[in-house]
Length: 297
Image (cartoon, rainbow, N blue to C red; front, side):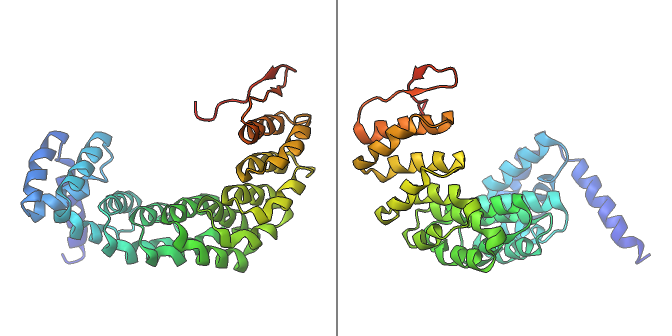
């Protein structure tokens, strides 16, 4: 009988959740707000239901109940079930529940299927305690996890600089490009020496970041990048020269209007417009002279 008990409980829980319908959610939400533990548990479980409308309604109700649901959500965020974990992590993130951070960090550090939603949730919560694990994720062999870590770290801003730089130095083969993205997005002036020493294969990303940071001491490196054999690097250099704002770079950009790659010519025209204040045309793939596409359209 004891061996059967866990199975019976699972079946009963599934049956209980299956009986919940979208139209039941408002009443459950009111009960949850008044502290009804059973209603809270039912709503939290329903967030992971396969029925999309039911899961969305339950999720919104949990957020509406707020504080009353946090304890149950913290229990569920320890679940090994992906759907339960994702729903609970998302709710805790939107409720800014910092007490969930240790469990979310543990899920991230496991590098399993729960790592992606954990990284997202940690970025929303924004607790500095998560920075070391998020920065370490920049060296993950999983490109999706690296992207999730980049987004989370960018949301957290300048406090991430030191740990991101450390991840880059400790594992440059994998972490460098992701670290460059973070440091460029947060405009980390202290990262300029690292960016200037970036590996050749990441030069395009480094030149982009130097333009974002707008450090005048890096201007010479950006100018040199206009002669790089890779068009991706020349494109980023053309963009960055506009961001750096030195009008003497107009001559370099005018030469770039003859670049063999259309996208480089377009960025050269766009940056020339920024530097000179005059509309500049570029030659498109059909040989027509047209204005650059308006990025803010």
